[in-house]
Image (cartoon, rainbow, N blue to C red; front, top):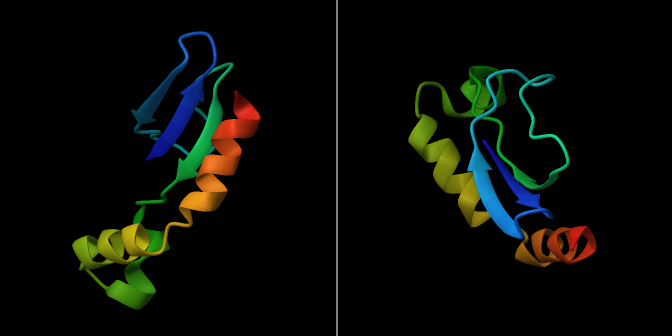
Length: 73
């Protein structure tokens, strides 16, 4: 899952990217990326993807995300 900033539309978009190396939005800037493929959480969380997502959300550094957004604008 990628939160992109699109400077043409001056909007943020949440996009599911099916592969790590393809399917990204051209001309957009990634602000925040969450890897939800199994390799990202299986060792630590097993089948508990919801726990992984919850931990990810609790650990977002919004100062960094805001700085990326400001730089992209």
